[in-house]
Image 1: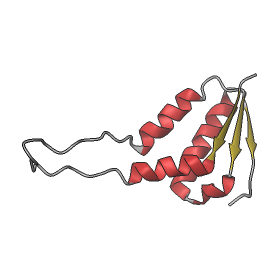
Image 2 (image 1 turned 30 degrees about the horizontal axis):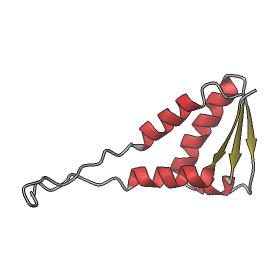
Image 3 (image 1 turned 90 degrees about the horizontal axis):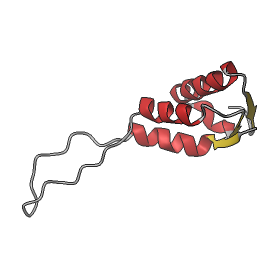
Length: 98
């Protein structure tokens, strides 16, 4: 049996990072070099990646569930939970419910 523990606190921080992705870079050139560009994942890409990673999990253990207070974040996590349960997996929730 494959068990994965996933911290909602850590996951929420990754989710917030997707919201704070930088906007378009200015076209300025500094010392002959364009500014560095960093590709950021969208929230959709983040949760699609996690969903793929959880594809063969038998037990998903979610910790720090008090971090599920944000409605948009909660919807995404609920979709992960539903996917695991649909495949016949189990989900354990640990922490204080929001």
